[in-house]
Every structure is written in structure tokens, then in C-alpha cells.
Length: 238
Ligand SMILES: [Zn+2]
Image (cartoon, rainbow, N blue to C red; front, side):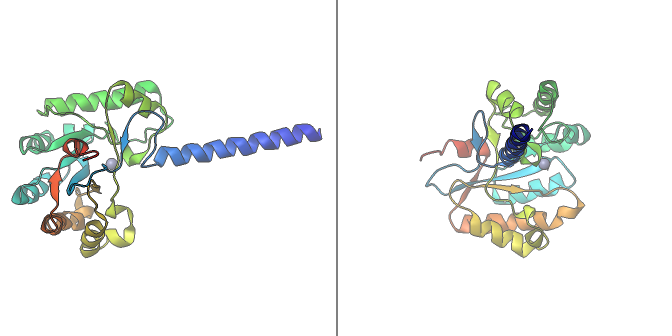
């Protein structure tokens, strides 16, 4: 009886450990089980990618105007249903020369889901991205940054890159609540090859929208050049 109890305890500890490890991997920005995952590109060149999640959304036009003013090309990670909701905004993103990435169809977590759910989330959104006129490479960014086994496996099979980020000011409430802090944090932490993630859409993100021109201006003055994520990847090792 004692032996059985010990085995049960060992089993429990192992199970708990595996769950913790699985959780850590699912949200890791730098590791996944299959395929490539990019958090930042290793380069000495002063290039940086500005990426916007949950596109298109309210005030897409305002964001595009700010980028045009500085001649900056960015990468917008689109949610399928939002493309259906705001198709002309998605078309504008494309016609202004920006990169359009896939951020799933429904923005549900892609962990502990069936293979067919994952395939449909990605394929529906890829189709919508093509429908609004985007012809370039389609990268993927997991909703909430979460991925475990099936999602990376699917992406690897379909030759799609997983794009994470190394700079995310909106994740810290004390920074997100203040435009000055969003700008300072982002500018201070940007390195050659950085991937900046901003959430600029919707009423609650006005501070982030206000921060965009200031981040660009400040980094351009330091000699940084803004490129799309796909372009940034071509600087690897350079
Ligand atoms: Zn998102």
C-alpha cells in the first residue's frame, strides 16, 4: 500500500511538472517545439519592425496617416473576423504598402484545440488576407502569444513563420496608462533587429496611437530604419 502511494505521488508530481512546463512553453516568446519562431532578428544594422495586433480596428485610417507622414512601412496582424467587419480598412492597409499578417480568425487561444480548429482559423484568415489584395508572404502571430504543439506543427507544415516580439509596452499597466511612458519604454529598449508590438486600435488605446509618431520620430533620429517583419528577417546575421 505504501509503495502504491509513493508511485501515485511521483505520478502526481510528474504530471504537475509537465503541466507547468507545457504552460511555460505555450507562452514562451523564444521557444516552440516545431518550426521557426522569431522574437527579434539578430543583426547589427539599425533596423526595427513596428507591428500592430488585432487589425483592422477603429481608427485604422488614423494609424495609416501617422505612418505615411514618416514614410514608415509596418506589419499589421489581422484577425479574420475583423477583416470581414472592416474590409475597406484592411484594403487600405494593403494599398498603403504595409505587410498583412495572420493573427487567427477568432482570436481564441490556440492551445488545447483540435487540429481542424487550428487549420480553419489559419486558412480562413489567409483567404481573407488574399481577398483584400495582399500578395506578400503571410506570417503568423498567435493570439495572446499562446502556442503549444499542434499550432507550431501546422505552421511548420505550411511554411509559415511564427512572429513574436521583444518589446511590448502595453503589457505593463503602469506604462500603458501614460503616453510618455509608452514612448520612453519603447525607445529605451529597442535594439537593432527589435520587433515592437503595439495595440493601437479601439477607444482604450488612444495613448498608444498618440505614442506612434513620437516612437518613430525618436528612433529615426537615432538612425533607425523601420521595415516590415519579412524585410527584417532578411537582415538575420548581417
Ligand atoms: Zn491579439
